[in-house]
Image (cartoon, rainbow, N blue to C red):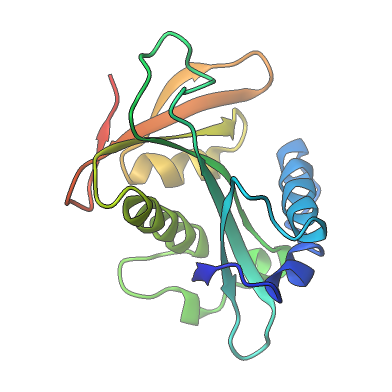
Length: 179
């Protein structure tokens, strides 16, 4: 995976992960909008491109959010990041191929999430930070993915999403559950 390059925005403008669920439509719209707008100065976008086909496999996006907007009862954090979106294109969701199951990564989603966490660690120069995301209440696959690396459900929201979070520990690849 890599940070999105100018030529990747044309691929993002066509991003499609499916449309069976409302959150899939939201992810499509988000990445397509980033592609049409050639990015967003406040958002870091990571992409996985199939080297043989030149096709977009998956994308992830994060931004700083030290205010923890969705969790007003929590104190302000010096270092906090919001994972805005993570998506796998429908073609690769349906037929991922064995080449994307490398090392400890058992799925493309696993690869993308771990890549985002590495990029977030680098973004904060290895300092401890809070990482959080909104995950659709009915999206059990994504919940299982983040739970596997240490995220916990922080609070349900009224809009069909839940807030999930973890603390990315300094100089470690591990996450710690937030109280």
